[in-house]
Length: 293
Image 1 (cartoon, rainbow, N blue to C red):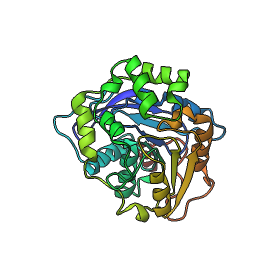
Image 2: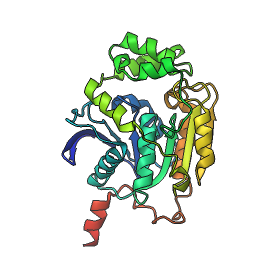
Image 3: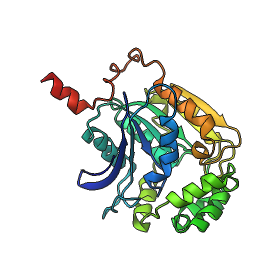
Image 4: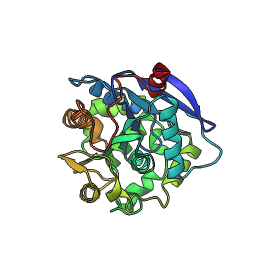
């Protein structure tokens, strides 16, 4: 279901796929539109067992969401997206964040621990406190030019994404075809949202179970960052994808998606310690409250 939601005065392009139980919120990489995650949504739906609702959204300036006049810092973005979840009628959500979206996922888990049940962090870091990429890769990421044109996307992607992105014609073709170039101002706002941000001071305090996934051939986020994060997390798990790059979630989906699905559906026959009981299957919070009246 594609729709538009207005949250805190901001128009957001949103897609919600139906399912049962706790929904999964997908937080995309910088400048990326929600259609790029369709292979992940399809792969999750094909897994045996529970089919979870999946929520996707475009950040302002990306995909179908208009650019805002002013930027927001990461805590403000986290509050905006958390309000989107509750506006959709849910009082509990799992969050999967990719790259820039991984920073957003961490911030949501920190600021809304009652809302966020479990977290999956893919190809991401602690922000300013991290082992950085090579300067040439960082320079490429400061511009959204790679999103303008299929040929540019394939050529640039092969250089900065690693993990055989350029050697996988099917993935590269889909990624290029599904890409919608972001608004340059909106792209800049996302860069500014992460400026000075870090999760290093609160990462060891997160109460949620966290799965950290990283490829061992990621030019953007060196693998050592994932190892440090997993070590700091109170309830962290680490999965390194051999030969995986920055987009391992797409290029190595056969390896990662079953792992992610198992992590999110683990132990659902009983309430998790320290958390409320599992929500009724597929029923948003607003509907459950209406039933009790």
